[in-house]
Amino acid sequence: MQNGGMRRPGYPSDVDDETYVFLLPYLVLSPEDAPQRKSPLRAVLNALFWMSRTGAQWEFLPNDLPPPDVARTQAARWFAAGCFENAVHDLRLLTRVQQQRGAELTAIIIDSRTLQSTPESGARAGFDSAKKRKGTKVYLVVDTLGQLLTLMTSPANEQDRAQVRELCAAAQEVTGGMIEVAFADQEYTGEIAHGDAAASNVELIVVKRPEATRGFILLPKRCVVERSFAWLSRFQHLGRDLERLSSTLIGFHFVAATVLMTAKYLRQLA
Image (cartoon, rainbow, N blue to C red; front, side):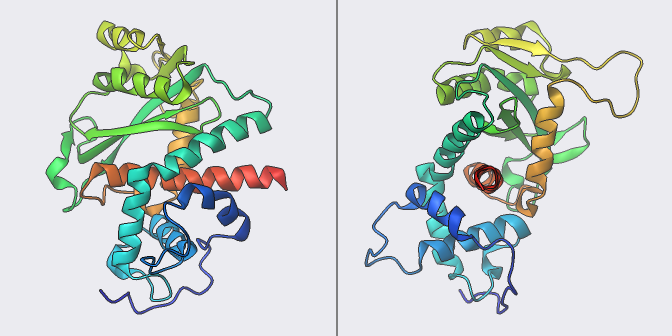
């Protein structure tokens, strides 16, 4: 399909040299000069970062980027191979050491947000009665610096506490079983949720809002994951659930986390 017929005048999502050199080992699934390769990896990465920032459809990629079918296919390969998950994992360890926190972490913070569904994602959406919105819930697991460990999705009508077992198990898998404590909000209250966390040797601690309070209140630990959601929301592609497959939605979250964490790590090195 023809590209969107426009050019990007110095669009800031272009990958700089330092970022590209750092990420290249994670992205090379076949030799750079493989005969079947139609576009340079850096150009495809530019396309994916542009998509993440703007929220545009593949068919509207500017004409100085690879064709939509090429960019979409390569992105699907990267998502399936967990390329950005691997980059995020290493960046988290490097950043923790850089900030003298130690690579091993023992505490995580869990929270969710609901993304409005679209015609593409409507088939797997649910109705969130609390937020009066049909869509998909995205569950985020971050460390105490707000850096992504893992995430999952569900229809918005599912209860947050029902995801505790899977979230804690995934966090233990990522960290090699080092997690001891998980902090969460009042949506995760209940004996079943605590038992599901304990099944992964994790103590679930619910950070409750003080009684008889109104408006915004900065709650310990919980503000960290809320800040992570705010960082991710700067990527327009994550403003709504634009994807037919939940795996693609998860993939774009890891792309955004990779952009944020790479910039932070390289900035501290400078």
